[in-house]
Image 1 (tube, rainbow, N blue to C red):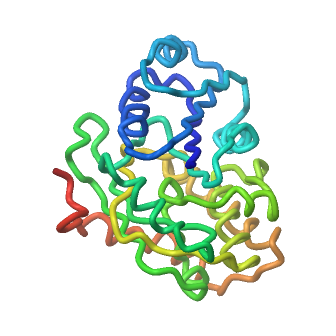
Image 2 (image 1 turned 180 degrees about the vertical axis):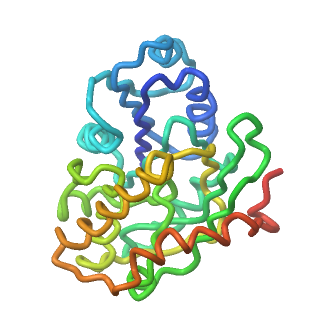
Length: 254
């Protein structure tokens, strides 16, 4: 079974799309929503929603604290995280994810991601085509889109949860830890897995981007790893082609 963890806080305007996209998948999914103390009606929506969900109402501080709480409460063998304002690209995409894990040697998988307009989710703003994994790519600023990343529970048990002290770089640190330090076995699913509404804490302002860069450096340091001199400069620059690239074929938005 797949466990999908959704951290939420005052997400009443978008949480329905997220829940429906999980509930519509034709596979066994445990959807855990970790609410950090919403006051806008989110909790009422969650309690009244017909889709099968598990609500964890806990005033956790931060996205990654919420994801950690969800991981500890999850019962699935495979775990993914989906933000409250994101949704799965197609009604069968988790079938693709499960197919990747049919190979017992695989510890994790990831795919592509489309950024969509917040008020018009059918309009693509950016397309993050992740491509095949390679440890050298990580040293050149590459990382998989975190909302598309699914990982076996046993990897968390062996290597630890998200480091909440690293702020918005907690997902980057996890990638470095499991992919580069522990060398888990990962595969690429060449499909758009998630649609993400535009926005994001690490890219909200220049000041936020500078803070994110500092945390990215810490992500390497806490793992005893050394990036190339250009690694953390390349990381944001790799996003530039996403603005004009568009998905084709099965990756397209209907």
